[in-house]
Image 1 (cartoon, rainbow, N blue to C red):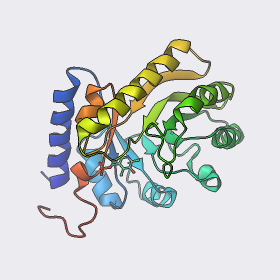
Image 2: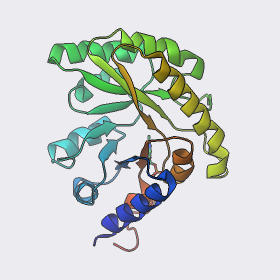
Image 3: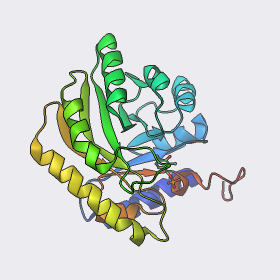
Image 4: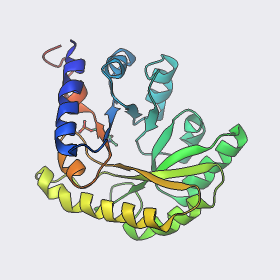
Length: 232
Ligand SMILES: *Cc1c(COP(=O)(O)O)cnc(C)c1O
């Protein structure tokens, strides 16, 4: 087995242990890993691939890196990049303004598709981080619900980098409350299927607090700061 396949198996075992029978989708966050390594993760059975940069996504998609798995965009989304993603990414996880929703909707209409999205929430209210302020989520959900070429599928968050996974738990718990509140309101074009939170350092805590989608990079591909990871 390749080290990537071993890592995917190990991550999956940890997910299963944390999930207690609930289904949790594993998204391989593959930034800075080439198409060949992404294909190894796909072959090892990750549920989806997540890419941060539009350029990397377009290049690796052309190289068929993601074939056979849904493709998610998880990075900061700029308005002028929307056209490269709509109809290409199965799920855009990082939508954080009505303006982006409007642009995605228009592009999707032009292509004759319905684009699935998540709303990213800046649950820690960090000045330098993207995402909607928690108090703006509901009106943005209402806006998304009014767009015919958008399907809102849930919420995503990256909590503040904490001293420990335990330190992130209140943020994960706040996200779960928001997720449940919105789900109970039953908006049009909206089905609160996915709560995407948890990364290599804290996915077990996120799952314990209700995540059903985790985005895992370094625990699958190795640390990104090392050009020649050990054990390959
Ligand atoms: C890189 C990245 C991840 C994965 O981070 P790791 O700590 O390497 O698991 C998850 N989500 C987003 C948005 C990322 O950019």
